[in-house]
Every structure is written in structure tokens, then in C-alpha cells.
Amino acid sequence: MLNRPIRAYSDAFYPSDLDSLKAVFDCLCVEFNVLPDTSDAHQIAGELIRLFQTGMADQDMLKIAMRTRWRTDWKVAG
Image: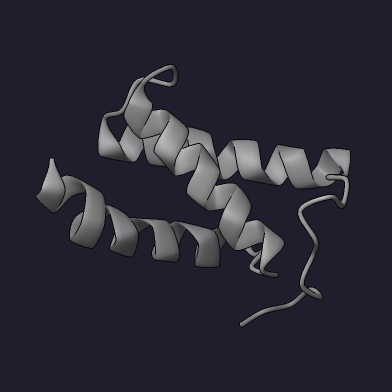
């Protein structure tokens, strides 16, 4: 599942990394009906970056992980 070595928080993101993360973020914001500049969007972005830094770089895997997190942690709590 992890297709990259674990990255340190100080490692730089490449433009392709940012493009990939933005595509997933935009997709999830639409799916979750979240506006981009809200606290929910900030939580989504932060979690995407955390997952990416642990080596989860595949867009589909990121979406699956975020959907699970949304259902179990954020949506239920909110």
C-alpha cells in the first residue's frame, strides 16, 4: 500500500505531489460538500498531507482513507 519511503515533515513537495494532493482535495471537497476555505477543508488538507508524508501517494488510496476518516471521525462528530 505504501509506495514511497516515509518522508520527513521537512522534505519538500514536488509540483507533481502538490498537483496530486490538490486533485484529491478538490474531489473530496465536492464529494463531502465542503467549501474550500472552511475548517472542515483545513482538516481534510492536513490529513491528506499527513497521509502523503507517511508514503500513501496513490490518489485512489488517499480518497479511500479520507472517506473512511470522514465517516468515522469527522462526520459523526459534527
